[in-house]
Image (cartoon, rainbow, N blue to C red):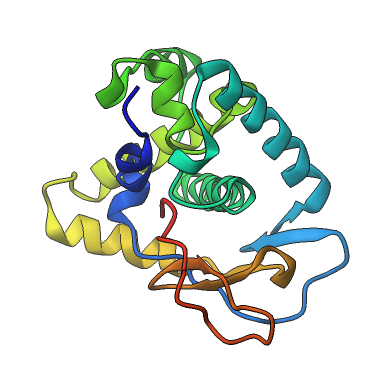
Length: 199
């Protein structure tokens, strides 16, 4: 099976958006990240990671095929999903159950709907919620002028970038250029920085 690294790096709408904005303000206890006004709890992240690991195993995909460690990859997807949901709510975008059903059948470049979702950090347990969020942003981009309209793309990037994202330092340091990076034992960036996760 082909590596899903390429699909993950170019996943859906997230690939056209600017890198996430993260800062180092203090996190509340038990939070993995805060996206806009929404909190992603460490326990929710752990559940998502366990479900995702099980889905990878069932699909015969090795974790080293991912562009980042599993926990960081899933956390980035969860943060993006939260931002997508907030943008859709802000602009009153609605996605029907039929649209979600159709989206979940999209095989993507690997001719498999399941692999298409796994390449984005999504386990089957979270597929409907993620697809609704992703389709909401696709609709929003169309509302702004469509994927071919550079002004629409810029407006979408601006809206996405305006959502403040703060990650707990326990999951690593996030940079706009590289995604999560290994800061090493004493907080200095090491040479083996992880490539950026979908964004």
